[in-house]
Length: 440
Image (tube, rainbow, N blue to C red; front, side, top):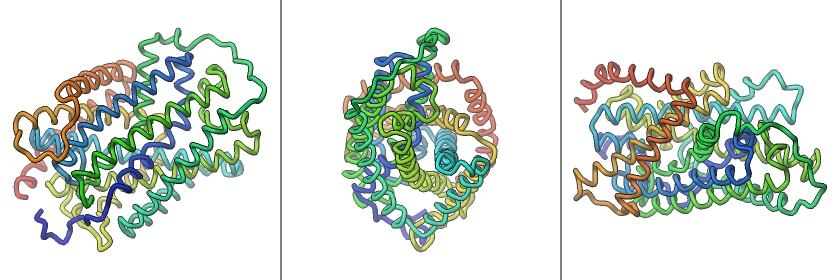
């Protein structure tokens, strides 16, 4: 596709959008739900904090890799472009589809969670969660069909408000001086499953909650100055998210003991009931809905960019490159929304969340390897930004990714088998599409 094509994406985004898409696409559903699950598995304050900190360090180092690659190859599609450039069409193909599935799953479980929070406010709608989730998906599909400017404005406003609301919640928790809650006596789950397995499963959930930290890279082609804006967006946004995640866990555990939060599906609401009373819990539930809406807005845009980039190279239908007059890759938006619509109907939050995390780790690991390959094979490529600590940080991230993949495969065999199945099916499909890509 040449720059003269009428289907070219519009370069109208800047630094504020990059930060907003990272914050808006990351903070939300995970931090409101997973603290209870993680507390149930680890049952130890310092292990819980260490798990969130380790996930944050992983993200911060990874930001350096993505900052270099995205500023060097500012194209729609994110990791797909980097792996394809480094290792060829098939590697790019499978990475792109893994990344697509991982991100296209996201709107489905965000809509599911929104519906679950709404039911808390409206118990009479208890049996309508699927309908509510589908309604949100349709509404945001229509919003993004109106153009990238609409999505950008909604993202920036909602992300700022989201940060303010989380800061208010944190301050309220640390200001709490009420009666101390007696810990629930129970057998530590840590001893049931073993410390290593429990920590790995917790880390899987933590990294799933951090998922979205590289969101700015998907929009590099639409950024006015990707060489400067992408690195700044990644680092500033990542540091802010890490700080909020760690501090909010400390705030929750300041209010309630680990044993009282353990296995709670809605830890934020449980904490709010203690801090604000029953009415306060309702207020926080409303805040949670608004927060997740911001995440949903971000992930309505990401999958369509991945599929657009792959369509341009012949790895999806040719009409996938169609851009409407307002800058939206409209065909890939509709395809992605249809995929999420089906997942809402057949899936649940837990299954979708674990599977998407597994795929994300695979994509991230492939991206770290591609940085080393491109440094060796194409040392003269213009690099507006270079990853700090190279090659040591890259090697560390590769080893860490392999360890995570191995641990996840052991502790989550169902998701691992799903990954294997998708991989086996990918090559014959690639062979069918390859002639088309060669003609581009």
